[in-house]
Image 1 (cartoon, rainbow, N blue to C red):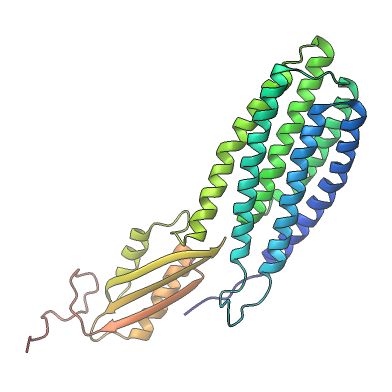
Image 2 (image 1 turned 90 degrees about the horizontal axis):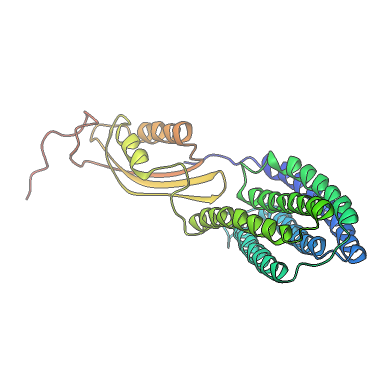
Length: 306
């Protein structure tokens, strides 16, 4: 027994990513030109970070387009899993960006560059505005899709980069203390790393068909056993194809005089309502002895041994 899937989230997330990609790509060009004209290594570094954003948004958009393809005889679940691959790729990109930020911070601490702080400030403020708009566009879909969440974290980390550049530009302009630039860069890198690991670990859990976040196998098993007519549960497997599409398979031992179809229907409805499991495959086995006493319908004596 299974439930249908809603594609409306995919279409909405696709539009969000298109807008964010367009804004980020346009400003990437502007920030690169501004970094060259002002001789600002900080702006060029932030432009490199934004280039990663553009790549991440493009990959995320491609993932949604591919994920919309229907299932076929070779991929019976369709292409939903490509979204998780994109999220894992984005997490890897975030690790690379964080490492690059830390390296640049070390290099700038040794030899702080001389920059035009005024022009640097103007470009950084414009970059902050673009990041805030992109974050606003992506925030609504970040909770429903790991793919969009990865893109959202990319833009979020770049927003922090813009704030750091703004702060550094102000300090340099009014104090001349150039060491603030690498210090801010280190703080940004340390902020990005744990969030990158969280996204990567969640993505890998989906790819390894682990139990989805927020679900506990014991809770599901106990809930199934409490369904009237169910004596025991075995071969229980719970995994996610992609974000919000949880699947479950299980064998249910039911009472001798229980209606197997009714038991499966009640179990399926319970799983969907209580655990949001959208795709359920249950198999029933009858005529076995109840060992837990929950169903109240099982045979009180084991079958005679020949």
